[in-house]
Image (cartoon, rainbow, N blue to C red):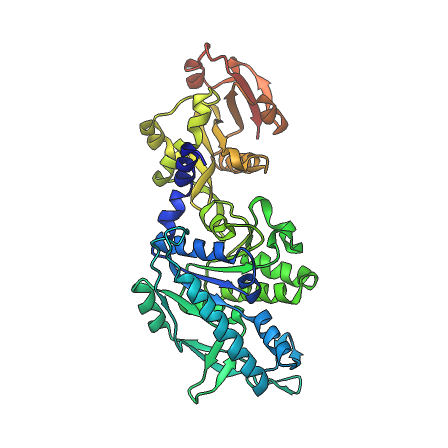
Length: 441
Protein backbone atom coordinates (compact mmCIF):
# COMPACT_ATOMS: atom_id res chain seq x y z
CA UNK A 1 0.00 0.00 0.00
CA UNK A 2 1.29 3.43 -0.94
CA UNK A 3 1.72 6.06 1.74
CA UNK A 4 -1.05 8.19 0.21
CA UNK A 5 -3.43 5.20 0.36
CA UNK A 6 -2.65 4.73 4.04
CA UNK A 7 -3.43 8.37 4.76
CA UNK A 8 -6.72 8.21 2.85
CA UNK A 9 -7.73 4.99 4.59
CA UNK A 10 -7.01 6.41 8.04
CA UNK A 11 -8.89 9.60 7.30
CA UNK A 12 -11.81 7.62 5.91
CA UNK A 13 -12.24 5.49 9.02
CA UNK A 14 -11.41 8.28 11.51
CA UNK A 15 -15.09 9.19 12.15
CA UNK A 16 -15.76 5.59 13.18
CA UNK A 17 -12.65 5.37 15.32
CA UNK A 18 -13.94 8.38 17.26
CA UNK A 19 -17.53 7.09 17.35
CA UNK A 20 -16.59 3.59 18.56
CA UNK A 21 -14.02 4.63 21.18
CA UNK A 22 -15.28 3.65 24.64
CA UNK A 23 -18.34 1.83 23.26
CA UNK A 24 -19.41 -1.68 24.25
CA UNK A 25 -19.60 -4.17 21.38
CA UNK A 26 -20.67 -7.79 21.69
CA UNK A 27 -19.10 -9.93 18.95
CA UNK A 28 -20.50 -13.44 18.50
CA UNK A 29 -19.17 -16.21 16.29
CA UNK A 30 -19.91 -19.90 15.98
CA UNK A 31 -17.61 -22.86 16.16
CA UNK A 32 -17.57 -22.93 12.35
CA UNK A 33 -15.87 -19.54 12.34
CA UNK A 34 -13.27 -20.80 14.81
CA UNK A 35 -12.43 -23.56 12.31
CA UNK A 36 -12.10 -21.11 9.42
CA UNK A 37 -8.67 -20.45 7.84
CA UNK A 38 -9.39 -16.75 8.42
CA UNK A 39 -9.82 -17.15 12.18
CA UNK A 40 -6.34 -15.81 12.95
CA UNK A 41 -7.16 -12.70 10.91
CA UNK A 42 -10.33 -12.26 12.96
CA UNK A 43 -8.30 -12.45 16.17
CA UNK A 44 -5.94 -9.80 14.78
CA UNK A 45 -8.89 -7.55 13.94
CA UNK A 46 -10.35 -8.02 17.42
CA UNK A 47 -7.03 -6.98 18.92
CA UNK A 48 -6.96 -3.92 16.66
CA UNK A 49 -10.47 -2.90 17.72
CA UNK A 50 -9.46 -3.24 21.35
CA UNK A 51 -6.44 -1.01 20.75
CA UNK A 52 -8.80 1.56 19.18
CA UNK A 53 -10.75 1.81 22.43
CA UNK A 54 -13.66 -0.58 21.83
CA UNK A 55 -14.86 -2.46 24.92
CA UNK A 56 -15.30 -6.02 23.69
CA UNK A 57 -17.39 -8.94 24.83
CA UNK A 58 -16.69 -12.05 22.73
CA UNK A 59 -19.16 -14.93 22.60
CA UNK A 60 -18.13 -18.16 20.91
CA UNK A 61 -20.18 -21.16 19.87
CA UNK A 62 -18.97 -24.74 19.66
CA UNK A 63 -21.54 -26.73 17.67
CA UNK A 64 -19.14 -28.47 15.22
CA UNK A 65 -16.63 -29.11 18.01
CA UNK A 66 -19.35 -30.79 20.09
CA UNK A 67 -20.43 -32.81 17.04
CA UNK A 68 -16.85 -33.99 16.58
CA UNK A 69 -16.55 -34.97 20.24
CA UNK A 70 -19.82 -36.91 20.07
CA UNK A 71 -18.70 -38.70 16.91
CA UNK A 72 -15.39 -39.64 18.53
CA UNK A 73 -17.32 -41.25 21.39
CA UNK A 74 -19.95 -42.79 19.05
CA UNK A 75 -22.80 -40.87 20.70
CA UNK A 76 -25.78 -39.67 18.65
CA UNK A 77 -27.69 -36.44 19.29
CA UNK A 78 -31.41 -35.78 19.36
CA UNK A 79 -32.78 -32.37 18.36
CA UNK A 80 -36.09 -30.76 19.29
CA UNK A 81 -37.03 -27.35 17.83
CA UNK A 82 -33.45 -26.95 16.70
CA UNK A 83 -32.06 -27.50 20.20
CA UNK A 84 -29.76 -30.37 21.10
CA UNK A 85 -31.06 -32.64 23.87
CA UNK A 86 -28.21 -32.61 26.39
CA UNK A 87 -28.21 -35.82 28.40
CA UNK A 88 -25.29 -36.57 30.78
CA UNK A 89 -23.05 -38.24 28.14
CA UNK A 90 -23.71 -35.36 25.74
CA UNK A 91 -22.97 -32.83 28.49
CA UNK A 92 -19.57 -34.47 29.01
CA UNK A 93 -18.86 -33.93 25.31
CA UNK A 94 -20.06 -30.32 25.53
CA UNK A 95 -17.74 -29.61 28.46
CA UNK A 96 -14.78 -31.19 26.68
CA UNK A 97 -15.40 -29.39 23.37
CA UNK A 98 -16.16 -25.98 24.86
CA UNK A 99 -13.26 -26.13 27.29
CA UNK A 100 -10.78 -27.07 24.57
CA UNK A 101 -12.04 -24.39 22.16
CA UNK A 102 -12.05 -21.73 24.84
CA UNK A 103 -8.41 -22.44 25.67
CA UNK A 104 -7.50 -22.26 21.98
CA UNK A 105 -9.22 -18.87 21.64
CA UNK A 106 -7.52 -17.55 24.77
CA UNK A 107 -4.17 -18.75 23.46
CA UNK A 108 -4.64 -16.91 20.16
CA UNK A 109 -5.77 -13.77 21.94
CA UNK A 110 -2.60 -13.97 24.04
CA UNK A 111 -0.32 -13.78 21.01
CA UNK A 112 2.03 -10.79 21.11
CA UNK A 113 4.81 -11.66 18.68
CA UNK A 114 6.27 -8.62 16.99
CA UNK A 115 6.14 -10.45 13.64
CA UNK A 116 2.33 -10.61 13.75
CA UNK A 117 -0.43 -7.97 13.78
CA UNK A 118 -0.80 -8.84 17.49
CA UNK A 119 2.64 -7.39 18.23
CA UNK A 120 2.41 -5.25 21.36
CA UNK A 121 -1.31 -5.94 21.80
CA UNK A 122 -1.05 -7.31 25.38
CA UNK A 123 -4.71 -8.26 25.57
CA UNK A 124 -6.05 -9.30 28.96
CA UNK A 125 -8.81 -11.90 28.74
CA UNK A 126 -11.39 -12.33 31.47
CA UNK A 127 -14.02 -15.00 32.05
CA UNK A 128 -16.04 -16.50 34.84
CA UNK A 129 -19.35 -17.86 36.03
CA UNK A 130 -21.17 -14.77 34.76
CA UNK A 131 -24.05 -16.59 33.06
CA UNK A 132 -26.83 -17.88 35.28
CA UNK A 133 -28.65 -20.59 33.36
CA UNK A 134 -31.92 -22.43 33.78
CA UNK A 135 -33.28 -25.59 32.18
CA UNK A 136 -35.32 -25.36 29.02
CA UNK A 137 -37.53 -28.08 30.45
CA UNK A 138 -39.77 -30.33 28.38
CA UNK A 139 -40.32 -29.59 24.67
CA UNK A 140 -42.93 -31.57 22.72
CA UNK A 141 -42.88 -34.22 25.41
CA UNK A 142 -39.09 -34.54 25.42
CA UNK A 143 -37.07 -33.70 28.54
CA UNK A 144 -34.24 -31.46 27.29
CA UNK A 145 -32.26 -32.30 30.48
CA UNK A 146 -29.09 -30.13 30.56
CA UNK A 147 -30.12 -27.92 27.64
CA UNK A 148 -30.76 -24.47 29.04
CA UNK A 149 -31.26 -20.81 28.33
CA UNK A 150 -30.02 -17.63 29.96
CA UNK A 151 -31.73 -16.54 33.16
CA UNK A 152 -29.50 -13.51 33.76
CA UNK A 153 -25.96 -12.16 33.36
CA UNK A 154 -23.62 -10.89 36.07
CA UNK A 155 -23.61 -7.40 34.59
CA UNK A 156 -21.57 -5.72 37.38
CA UNK A 157 -18.75 -8.24 36.90
CA UNK A 158 -18.81 -7.78 33.13
CA UNK A 159 -18.76 -4.00 33.41
CA UNK A 160 -15.95 -4.01 35.96
CA UNK A 161 -13.77 -6.07 33.66
CA UNK A 162 -14.59 -3.96 30.62
CA UNK A 163 -13.74 -0.77 32.54
CA UNK A 164 -10.44 -2.39 33.54
CA UNK A 165 -9.56 -2.77 29.88
CA UNK A 166 -10.10 -6.52 29.64
CA UNK A 167 -11.74 -8.45 26.82
CA UNK A 168 -14.57 -10.56 28.24
CA UNK A 169 -14.88 -14.03 26.71
CA UNK A 170 -18.19 -15.85 27.17
CA UNK A 171 -18.71 -19.54 26.39
CA UNK A 172 -22.13 -21.13 25.73
CA UNK A 173 -22.31 -22.60 29.22
CA UNK A 174 -24.53 -21.50 32.10
CA UNK A 175 -24.54 -22.36 35.80
CA UNK A 176 -27.44 -22.59 38.21
CA UNK A 177 -27.48 -21.60 41.89
CA UNK A 178 -27.77 -25.33 42.64
CA UNK A 179 -24.50 -26.10 40.85
CA UNK A 180 -25.94 -27.52 37.61
CA UNK A 181 -24.31 -26.93 34.23
CA UNK A 182 -26.37 -26.07 31.16
CA UNK A 183 -25.62 -26.22 27.46
CA UNK A 184 -26.70 -22.88 25.92
CA UNK A 185 -27.07 -21.47 22.42
CA UNK A 186 -24.26 -19.01 21.74
CA UNK A 187 -26.77 -16.72 19.99
CA UNK A 188 -28.87 -16.57 23.17
CA UNK A 189 -25.79 -15.76 25.25
CA UNK A 190 -24.79 -12.96 22.88
CA UNK A 191 -28.31 -11.52 22.79
CA UNK A 192 -28.58 -11.58 26.59
CA UNK A 193 -25.15 -10.00 27.04
CA UNK A 194 -25.89 -7.21 24.55
CA UNK A 195 -29.32 -6.54 26.02
CA UNK A 196 -28.36 -6.54 29.69
CA UNK A 197 -25.19 -4.51 29.07
CA UNK A 198 -27.13 -2.08 26.87
CA UNK A 199 -24.38 -2.63 24.31
CA UNK A 200 -23.96 -0.15 21.50
CA UNK A 201 -23.62 -2.92 18.92
CA UNK A 202 -24.17 -6.65 18.63
CA UNK A 203 -22.26 -8.29 15.76
CA UNK A 204 -22.82 -11.84 14.56
CA UNK A 205 -20.09 -13.33 12.37
CA UNK A 206 -21.50 -16.14 10.25
CA UNK A 207 -19.95 -18.60 7.74
CA UNK A 208 -22.47 -17.76 5.00
CA UNK A 209 -22.78 -14.40 3.26
CA UNK A 210 -25.78 -12.47 4.67
CA UNK A 211 -25.69 -10.19 1.63
CA UNK A 212 -26.90 -13.20 -0.38
CA UNK A 213 -29.72 -14.18 1.97
CA UNK A 214 -33.22 -13.86 0.43
CA UNK A 215 -34.14 -10.97 2.71
CA UNK A 216 -31.05 -9.01 1.57
CA UNK A 217 -32.91 -8.20 -1.66
CA UNK A 218 -34.90 -5.63 0.34
CA UNK A 219 -32.01 -4.00 2.18
CA UNK A 220 -31.45 -1.00 -0.05
CA UNK A 221 -28.13 0.19 -1.43
CA UNK A 222 -26.05 -0.43 1.68
CA UNK A 223 -27.52 -3.54 3.31
CA UNK A 224 -29.54 -1.95 6.09
CA UNK A 225 -32.98 -2.76 7.47
CA UNK A 226 -35.09 -1.31 10.20
CA UNK A 227 -36.04 -3.75 12.94
CA UNK A 228 -39.69 -3.68 11.88
CA UNK A 229 -38.73 -4.53 8.28
CA UNK A 230 -36.46 -7.32 9.51
CA UNK A 231 -39.27 -8.88 11.50
CA UNK A 232 -41.60 -8.67 8.50
CA UNK A 233 -39.06 -10.26 6.15
CA UNK A 234 -38.31 -12.96 8.69
CA UNK A 235 -41.98 -13.90 8.60
CA UNK A 236 -42.18 -13.75 4.81
CA UNK A 237 -38.80 -15.20 3.74
CA UNK A 238 -37.37 -16.84 6.85
CA UNK A 239 -38.30 -20.33 5.66
CA UNK A 240 -35.79 -19.98 2.82
CA UNK A 241 -32.92 -19.67 5.32
CA UNK A 242 -31.00 -22.54 6.86
CA UNK A 243 -31.97 -23.39 10.47
CA UNK A 244 -28.68 -21.86 11.68
CA UNK A 245 -29.17 -18.61 9.74
CA UNK A 246 -32.82 -18.37 10.77
CA UNK A 247 -31.85 -18.88 14.41
CA UNK A 248 -29.27 -16.13 14.09
CA UNK A 249 -31.85 -13.78 12.60
CA UNK A 250 -34.29 -14.55 15.40
CA UNK A 251 -31.56 -13.49 17.83
CA UNK A 252 -31.07 -10.29 15.83
CA UNK A 253 -34.71 -9.30 16.18
CA UNK A 254 -34.77 -10.32 19.86
CA UNK A 255 -31.77 -8.07 20.54
CA UNK A 256 -33.44 -5.18 18.73
CA UNK A 257 -36.59 -5.60 20.78
CA UNK A 258 -34.36 -5.74 23.87
CA UNK A 259 -33.03 -2.25 23.20
CA UNK A 260 -29.86 -2.88 21.15
CA UNK A 261 -29.96 -0.13 18.52
CA UNK A 262 -27.58 -1.64 15.98
CA UNK A 263 -27.21 -5.35 15.18
CA UNK A 264 -24.84 -6.46 12.41
CA UNK A 265 -24.49 -9.65 10.42
CA UNK A 266 -21.12 -10.06 8.70
CA UNK A 267 -19.68 -12.93 6.70
CA UNK A 268 -16.41 -14.58 7.60
CA UNK A 269 -15.93 -15.50 3.94
CA UNK A 270 -13.62 -12.55 3.28
CA UNK A 271 -10.60 -11.27 5.18
CA UNK A 272 -11.30 -8.21 7.34
CA UNK A 273 -15.10 -8.54 7.30
CA UNK A 274 -15.41 -7.25 10.86
CA UNK A 275 -13.35 -4.13 10.18
CA UNK A 276 -15.12 -3.42 6.91
CA UNK A 277 -18.48 -3.73 8.61
CA UNK A 278 -17.64 -1.42 11.50
CA UNK A 279 -15.19 1.10 10.05
CA UNK A 280 -16.75 1.92 6.68
CA UNK A 281 -20.01 3.77 6.21
CA UNK A 282 -21.85 1.12 4.21
CA UNK A 283 -20.16 -1.92 5.74
CA UNK A 284 -19.88 -5.37 4.17
CA UNK A 285 -22.85 -7.27 5.60
CA UNK A 286 -26.35 -6.49 6.86
CA UNK A 287 -27.22 -3.86 9.45
CA UNK A 288 -30.43 -3.95 11.46
CA UNK A 289 -31.23 -0.68 13.17
CA UNK A 290 -33.86 -0.09 15.82
CA UNK A 291 -33.54 3.69 15.42
CA UNK A 292 -35.79 4.55 12.50
CA UNK A 293 -33.78 7.69 11.65
CA UNK A 294 -30.71 5.77 10.42
CA UNK A 295 -31.34 7.64 7.17
CA UNK A 296 -33.58 10.64 7.73
CA UNK A 297 -34.72 13.73 5.84
CA UNK A 298 -35.20 16.78 8.06
CA UNK A 299 -34.74 20.51 8.45
CA UNK A 300 -31.10 21.51 8.64
CA UNK A 301 -29.63 22.86 11.86
CA UNK A 302 -26.54 24.90 12.60
CA UNK A 303 -24.73 21.65 13.42
CA UNK A 304 -25.17 20.58 9.79
CA UNK A 305 -23.22 23.52 8.36
CA UNK A 306 -19.93 21.63 8.25
CA UNK A 307 -21.53 18.63 6.61
CA UNK A 308 -23.26 20.74 3.97
CA UNK A 309 -20.04 22.59 3.18
CA UNK A 310 -18.18 19.30 2.74
CA UNK A 311 -20.97 18.05 0.47
CA UNK A 312 -21.20 21.09 -1.81
CA UNK A 313 -17.53 22.09 -2.02
CA UNK A 314 -16.65 19.63 -4.84
CA UNK A 315 -19.63 20.97 -6.83
CA UNK A 316 -18.54 24.55 -6.18
CA UNK A 317 -15.01 23.73 -7.30
CA UNK A 318 -16.31 22.46 -10.66
CA UNK A 319 -18.71 25.36 -11.14
CA UNK A 320 -21.90 23.34 -10.72
CA UNK A 321 -22.92 25.41 -7.68
CA UNK A 322 -22.28 29.04 -6.82
CA UNK A 323 -19.77 29.20 -3.92
CA UNK A 324 -21.12 29.89 -0.44
CA UNK A 325 -19.03 30.94 2.53
CA UNK A 326 -19.54 29.39 5.95
CA UNK A 327 -20.88 32.75 7.20
CA UNK A 328 -23.43 32.90 4.40
CA UNK A 329 -24.49 29.30 4.95
CA UNK A 330 -24.91 29.88 8.68
CA UNK A 331 -27.22 32.82 7.92
CA UNK A 332 -29.22 30.77 5.40
CA UNK A 333 -29.32 27.46 7.28
CA UNK A 334 -33.01 27.88 8.11
CA UNK A 335 -33.80 27.55 4.39
CA UNK A 336 -32.05 24.19 4.02
CA UNK A 337 -33.24 20.61 4.27
CA UNK A 338 -30.81 17.72 4.57
CA UNK A 339 -30.78 13.98 4.18
CA UNK A 340 -28.55 12.39 6.83
CA UNK A 341 -27.29 8.82 6.84
CA UNK A 342 -25.69 7.55 10.03
CA UNK A 343 -24.55 11.07 10.91
CA UNK A 344 -23.27 12.02 7.43
CA UNK A 345 -25.03 14.69 5.36
CA UNK A 346 -25.53 12.87 2.05
CA UNK A 347 -27.89 15.32 0.33
CA UNK A 348 -29.17 18.86 0.74
CA UNK A 349 -31.50 21.39 -0.85
CA UNK A 350 -32.59 24.93 -0.08
CA UNK A 351 -35.82 26.88 -0.61
CA UNK A 352 -35.64 30.68 -0.72
CA UNK A 353 -39.14 32.22 -0.81
CA UNK A 354 -40.03 35.40 -2.71
CA UNK A 355 -43.36 35.99 -1.04
CA UNK A 356 -44.45 39.05 -3.04
CA UNK A 357 -44.04 37.12 -6.28
CA UNK A 358 -45.53 33.93 -4.78
CA UNK A 359 -42.42 32.13 -5.99
CA UNK A 360 -39.64 30.12 -4.39
CA UNK A 361 -36.11 29.44 -5.54
CA UNK A 362 -35.02 25.82 -5.46
CA UNK A 363 -31.30 26.07 -4.77
CA UNK A 364 -28.20 24.13 -3.80
CA UNK A 365 -29.45 20.68 -4.80
CA UNK A 366 -26.59 18.28 -4.02
CA UNK A 367 -26.23 14.55 -3.42
CA UNK A 368 -23.07 12.83 -2.17
CA UNK A 369 -21.37 11.00 -5.03
CA UNK A 370 -21.61 7.64 -3.22
CA UNK A 371 -25.39 7.91 -2.90
CA UNK A 372 -26.54 9.10 -6.30
CA UNK A 373 -28.96 7.19 -8.50
CA UNK A 374 -31.42 6.38 -5.69
CA UNK A 375 -33.94 9.21 -6.24
CA UNK A 376 -32.72 11.13 -3.20
CA UNK A 377 -32.77 14.45 -5.08
CA UNK A 378 -36.38 13.75 -6.08
CA UNK A 379 -37.28 13.05 -2.45
CA UNK A 380 -35.82 16.41 -1.43
CA UNK A 381 -37.66 18.13 -4.30
CA UNK A 382 -40.92 16.67 -3.03
CA UNK A 383 -40.13 18.02 0.43
CA UNK A 384 -39.45 21.47 -0.98
CA UNK A 385 -42.65 21.45 -3.02
CA UNK A 386 -44.68 20.58 0.06
CA UNK A 387 -43.04 23.36 2.07
CA UNK A 388 -43.56 25.85 -0.76
CA UNK A 389 -47.28 25.06 -0.89
CA UNK A 390 -47.55 25.55 2.88
CA UNK A 391 -46.04 29.01 2.43
CA UNK A 392 -48.61 29.87 -0.25
CA UNK A 393 -46.11 29.87 -3.12
CA UNK A 394 -47.46 29.16 -6.60
CA UNK A 395 -44.29 28.21 -8.45
CA UNK A 396 -40.69 27.15 -8.06
CA UNK A 397 -37.78 28.35 -10.15
CA UNK A 398 -34.16 27.32 -10.30
CA UNK A 399 -31.01 28.52 -12.04
CA UNK A 400 -28.66 25.85 -13.39
CA UNK A 401 -25.75 25.48 -15.75
CA UNK A 402 -25.16 21.72 -15.50
CA UNK A 403 -28.31 19.69 -14.85
CA UNK A 404 -31.25 21.01 -16.90
CA UNK A 405 -32.45 17.52 -17.85
CA UNK A 406 -33.08 16.50 -14.23
CA UNK A 407 -35.23 19.59 -13.72
CA UNK A 408 -37.16 18.99 -16.95
CA UNK A 409 -37.73 15.34 -15.99
CA UNK A 410 -39.03 16.61 -12.63
CA UNK A 411 -41.69 18.80 -14.25
CA UNK A 412 -39.80 22.07 -14.77
CA UNK A 413 -40.00 24.03 -18.01
CA UNK A 414 -37.44 26.40 -19.43
CA UNK A 415 -38.15 30.09 -18.87
CA UNK A 416 -36.31 33.36 -19.26
CA UNK A 417 -34.68 35.90 -17.00
CA UNK A 418 -37.82 38.02 -17.35
CA UNK A 419 -39.80 35.29 -15.57
CA UNK A 420 -37.77 35.72 -12.38
CA UNK A 421 -38.96 37.73 -9.37
CA UNK A 422 -37.76 41.34 -9.51
CA UNK A 423 -35.31 40.88 -6.62
CA UNK A 424 -33.75 37.84 -8.26
CA UNK A 425 -33.66 39.43 -11.70
CA UNK A 426 -31.49 42.22 -10.35
CA UNK A 427 -28.95 39.69 -9.05
CA UNK A 428 -28.83 37.54 -12.19
CA UNK A 429 -25.25 36.83 -13.29
CA UNK A 430 -25.15 37.19 -17.07
CA UNK A 431 -21.55 35.93 -17.18
CA UNK A 432 -22.64 32.65 -15.64
CA UNK A 433 -25.59 32.58 -18.08
CA UNK A 434 -27.61 30.06 -16.05
CA UNK A 435 -30.71 28.49 -17.54
CA UNK A 436 -33.99 29.50 -15.87
CA UNK A 437 -36.28 26.57 -15.09
CA UNK A 438 -39.81 27.00 -13.67
CA UNK A 439 -42.40 24.64 -12.24
CA UNK A 440 -45.97 25.58 -11.36
CA UNK A 441 -47.18 24.04 -8.13
